[in-house]
Image 1 (cartoon, rainbow, N blue to C red):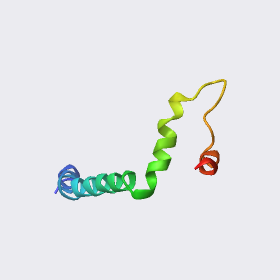
Image 2 (cartoon, helix red, strand yellow; image 1 turned 135 degrees about the vertical axis):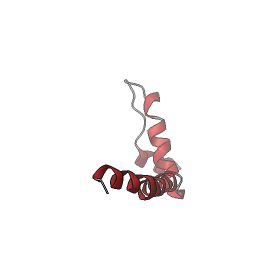
Image 3 (cartoon, one colour; image 1 turned 60 degrees about the horizontal axis):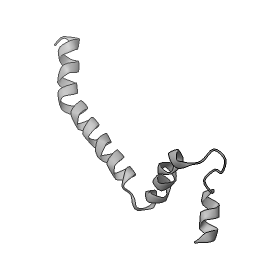
Length: 64
């Protein structure tokens, strides 16, 4: 069997499975329960004012 054919067969079977498992892992990592605070912080980054930066996360915890 030629090298190209062997690599092609591997990519068609195990490569696809590996990419699918990686995709599911990333989706689970993004939607895990403790991630919402981190993503809310990153989502507010474009809304920060140059004169008065957004409060630090530690300041948010004190106010709450």
